[in-house]
Length: 428
Image 1 (cartoon, rainbow, N blue to C red):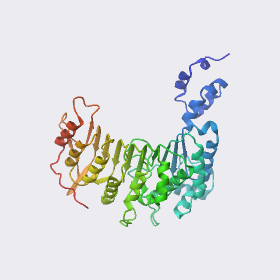
Image 2: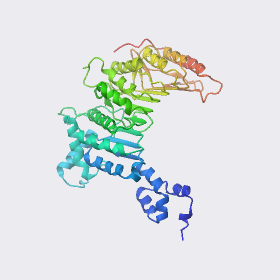
Image 3: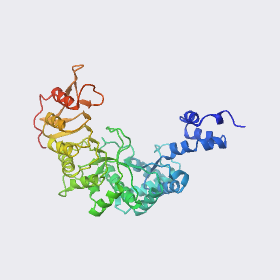
Image 4: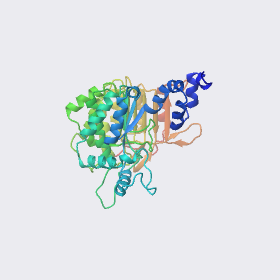
């Protein structure tokens, strides 16, 4: 005879266990064979839809075990590749030197790092920095990807590092940069993706969907995009179903040393995703050389055309008004949402650029904390007609403003902008 809880509808059972911790969930499922069966699908979706791994052999072996289980492999839709940061590696190195596992309590705990993995994490980090070919990691990761039949998204991030973080240095030593390790991991993940011969729908080097300064990310150095032509062609196949691309980029690295055309490699990478619908580019606003960020945007405006692009989000970038206008013109038939935040207008005027958007078919425009140069950096501000205050952001949404067309809202946006100090942006 079944118990009262076993006679509950499955939907009500799922509602009851929605806030259970993992141990509570496991114990509940062991109450009876019937409960174990009816909660199987929700259990898999909750604890196996997202898997996180590093490039260490022990972590990849666990991922391979999940991918080899036919009951679990089909539930994994998101694969996160985590890169430990320098501070964590230094701590793990100290723990490894002591050789006591679990480590003494004087050592801070690093989340999601098992004691048995400590030596592997340190060795993997050192091998990447030494330039060793991570072919074993690429092979294991590609096999796991191939078996995860429902894999749709891949994301890469550096643990506890955000879009506002600067490079990490140890006093008295050569720079040991989180960005460099993240970029090497990025190349290894792409190599595994190509070797697996699968197609994904989302690729991102940030964690989460809301972009802000505290967003955890892996800012990829521009040199990591220097792929040979045959690799770009192969990426076109791997990205043939890609709908969302979110990239965190670092353009100021190793000073001003540049190979001519360096910025075009980033454009070629983006252009390989011909079916792209959403593109987000996050730069490091602390990078002093805004000309490098502007060079990337100029290359994208001149060479990237993805016919289905519906949303473009630029965070921390720098650009010339003419370049962004060209980009908008090239995608006017499809682009409906434009987000520009924490950005610097290097050449041109904001009110001229906003006026140029009237020729587009935008339905949504968000400008926040944007700047221009007039002596020093100046914030663009808009008059709030309700309060009379000046604000550093404005949102235009045609779907929520009854009686207003987007063209009328853009005209109003220009009228409300404070241009009392705005002049032609100067190169610096």
